Image (cartoon, rainbow, N blue to C red):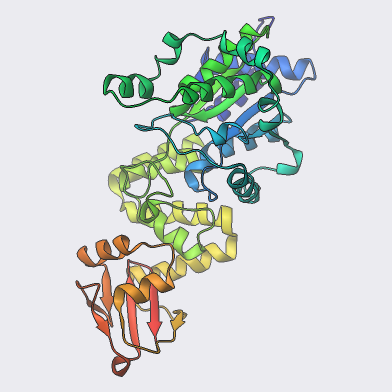
Length: 407
C-alpha cells in the first residue's frame, strides 16, 4: 500500500473506531492509512469476525466487538461474518486448560440462528456477508490440507500460552486442536480479510491469520483489532453465560438488564461507558471527574438507562428505571409480581427453581447464604424451608430485583 500524508478525517475515523482497542500492527496511523486507501480507491475494506456459536445467547460482552463492526459498516465497509461450521466442531482452545468439547453440526446450525437474531440488535445483518467456513474447510482435499499445514511449525503453535501451559503441566493436547488456529487463519485467506476483529484472547489466532495470508501471497495482510474482554457485574470474572448471576444477556428483560447494570462494581463504570456506549471521549473524562466527587449510583443510573434504551427502547428503559427506584432504592414491592399456583406443600428452592429456569439450585443456595432470599419480607437462610398451603399467599424475593407470589 502506497504511503502518503494521512488526511485528518481518516485519522479521526481511526481514533473513533479504535477507542478501547489494540490495533496491530502500526496502531491508529496504520488503520487511518487503510481507511484512506480504501476511500480513495473506492474499495471497501473487508472486516472479518469469526463466530463459533458454542452458546446460543449473546451478552453485553459480545457487543463490544459488534459495535466496532457497526462503526465500520456505517462508513461503508463490508462486514464478513463467518459462522464456524467447521471450526466450531473443533472448539476454540484459546484460554482453555483442557480440551474443549466439540459441537455437532446440528448444534452449530441451531446456535447460529439465535446468534444472528441477536446480532441484528447491533449491526445490519442484511448488509453483511454471511458465510460458513464448513463450505470450504470440509472440502479441503488431502493435498490442500498438507499445503496448509506446511505453513506452520509446531514451535509456532506452542508459543500459544494455553498450549505451552498445558504442555508444561502434562495435560493432554489433542492434535486436532492445533488445526483450530490454522483453520481460522485460512478463513482470512478465503474471505480476503483486510481487518480481523477479536477479543484479546484471540491475539495468537488473529495475528496468525496475517502470516497465513502472506504465505498465500496477499500483499497487504490483514490488520488486527483486539477488544478487551468485559468483566461481568462482579468486576472480576469475564462476562459469560457460565456465570448467569454476573452476566447481562441481550435477551434479558429490560428491568433485569437495568438492575444488573446498576449492580456492577463502581470500578467498571468508565469501562462500560467506553466500550458499550457512544458517548464522546470528552463526556467520559467528565464522568471520571464526577466519580471523584459525586455518588457513583447516580452516574451508574445514566449508564443503566443508556444501555437499556439501546437494546430495549426508550419506554422500556424509563419503566425499568422507575421500577428500580421503587423496588431497590425505596424498597417497595412491585405491583406486577408474577404469580404461581401452589397445589401442594413445596420447598422454597423447588418453587424458585421450577419458576425461574435461569437459576440453578446452587445459585438459589448462594442467594440464601448471602441474605438475598426473603419470604414475606423476612430473610430466609434455609432454601429448603417448606411452604405449606395453609401459609398462602406468600411473597418471595430472590436477589435484589426478582419477586414471585405463591397463591
